Image (cartoon, rainbow, N blue to C red; front, side, top):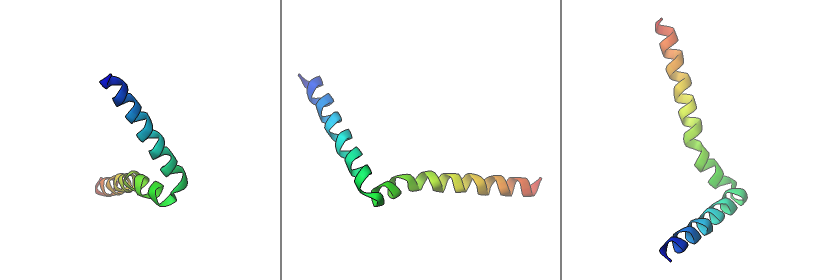
Length: 53
């Protein structure tokens, strides 16, 4: 019984999140911002490391 509730709630939340992600570009940008920030940090690290060598 509790397993059914947890699975059902998870499916509902995943569906709601997917709909929000599709129809709210601002939300999509906010979710993906850390990825781009991390990529930029890695590039900067590589540049500074190569400059020292």
